[in-house]
Length: 593
Image (cartoon, rainbow, N blue to C red; front, side, top):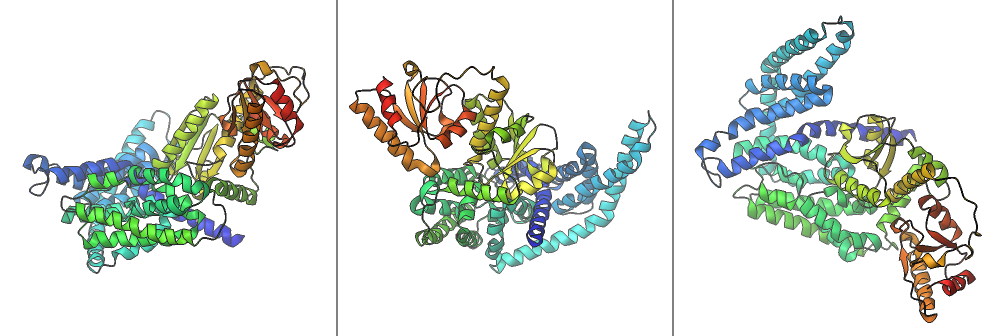
């Protein structure tokens, strides 16, 4: 137990460090792309449309704009606006003190300057007399900024210049020795553990910018952002998978390859860990082809979409980049297909396995989600929630799609709560907050917002917990707004009291784990209706797809009726012990239109 906790703690620390690095780069990816496009289009004399005047923007953007933005962002992460200004001033000392682009120097001086300022403020701010706050705030920041810039100019700058030079030499030597593909042996498993942004934006992008500034392009931009390995794995699931994973793979492949949201294929790999070999094989193949065929990008491709890669590809690198991505997809597909075809396990329903995994994990931590039996009690925990936030590592792709999905479910259920998305590092502990995050990031989210309500999911795009959350909020609303209970005029489970004149549709509840029973019951009931000359439509639907009105007659078992009761208040129900041959079914058919 202690060993498992220790491993979790180490993983969280590694993720936090990686997120701190990527957190300085991610908000500035747009600026990096602006520099890359300017250089690709207008650099003299090798751009697509060389222009001497516009070319004057390239070097200032590289040497001043980008490092200052990174330093500013790093300082802001530590101490908000004051830290941001201190970080920018300290970064300028590194920039002026060297002739090389100082991205790594900015990633040091930005947070360091802000951290020192924060310590000074903690020591002296409470001792400032009333009326002297402004003079302290301005001059403490100004004096510290001056000292930080001088320190960076004389100390950090020269050290980072030597370090950056040798880092570039090392990368070039690795590339020339054709050893760079071996890095994907580490990169691909790390991606699945949600370290993709830390590796890509925290390490590879700064080194890639330095290399691109020297030789016009860098293969380092492609090592983490290559969508080929994920595409191959998803196509293999599409052709050789089973159950839900097979049916969901085509859509996931489109989002991964064209949308650049790599996180979408991580649950597929986690479901069958041996598939990490397919990801590694694809990654190694892609990087080998990039380096061999002269591939490379002018700037970071973020997100890792084939569209983004083509936009920022160097003029002479399109063939290498396309073949590298295609080769990675082919190799990962072949390996994944072999693994899946030799898989002897039975059913392979992705959503069911995610739900099972989440339930077991929650149980091991002494937590539980509001299932049917305890829904009335657990729903109370949602009473104080005023806002829902999806949090992922980068705060963009997967969390944005998850937020959009839940927002749509809220809209259909009539729940009026704001649903937004952000990066885990930007979470703020506030009252009335429900944080939804991936399981691998749950510990970090809890550290950032200990007073919030937390829900962890395996996959932002297909978690069964969304329906539980919607049901809990809806049940809460019904409890709060429900008028005084009226006398019950019908016996539960009988046809007495059902207003058949209002029934326009008969529904059976379809569960992912029991699709066959619901389908068979629907078919038998529909046939019986047809023989009786009845025309009321009969459908099998999921529980969250029902409309809460009296025109629906829902035929359920006693166990399912408990879950139905906390979700809907107006639908009419017929509770039966057997969905296939209960005598009440025949009575209902006699009374239907």
